[in-house]
Length: 155
Image (cartoon, rainbow, N blue to C red):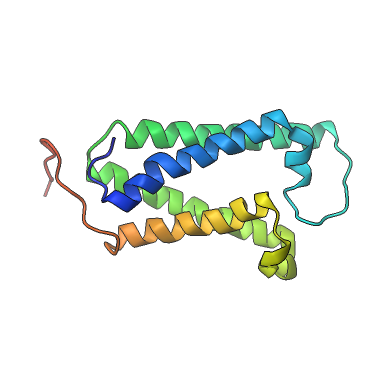
């Protein structure tokens, strides 16, 4: 495990985030039609076509991939530069994820927190939490990296 991370970011990025991504994967596979329909809270039912099905399953597969990448990177390196670059890439993806959700939902549904379903909480709330945690870590607000083992800094 990336012991270079301070406690809170390590808990979030090595446990909570992979667990949430695995949950997204399982949900997409176990109940694909509901997973697809619930991407937009309070929307009228839409036809569940083969296109919708494949897109929902591919999205679920991406969640599974994100879990594997997080585990693969954060459990196999103590190199701070690798960890930081991974988290920078994730932060950029967080912005894209939130923007896409906003773009599809529109302002009214995006800010209607009371109307959010579990997937909106994941797509907006949890992703925003992850983004703020990444930025907080990268800015040094959530603690400093710890030097572990024989990690050498290059000039």
